[in-house]
Length: 91
Image 1 (cartoon, rainbow, N blue to C red):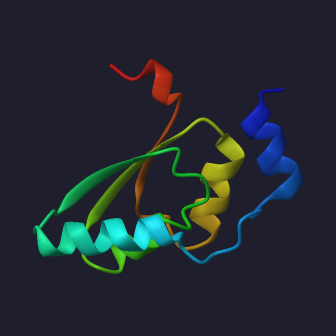
Image 2 (image 1 turned 90 degrees about the vertical axis):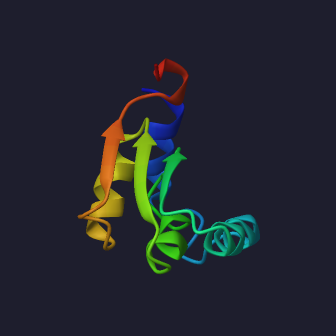
Image 3 (image 1 turned 30 degrees about the vertical axis):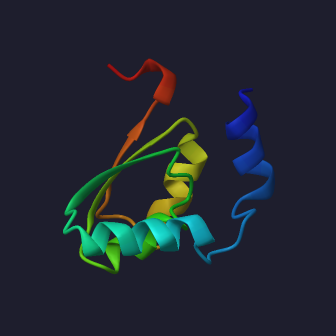
């Protein structure tokens, strides 16, 4: 089983639900510069995506772990476009 899939199966929401400081700083930059749409590679279960969504930024995510995508949808991101796949295989 692939590393991230097994990690999310075992540890679920391993980093909690508060966004990272870098996500908060990035959100501030995006808001100041009127960014409306972003791609979050490795969206995981969405803890960093929420800070963007709460500030009217449209989020699309790509995630290698199906379990992480399911967790994101269970935790309020059911309306976010998320694609199951590897960032390394993006066109």
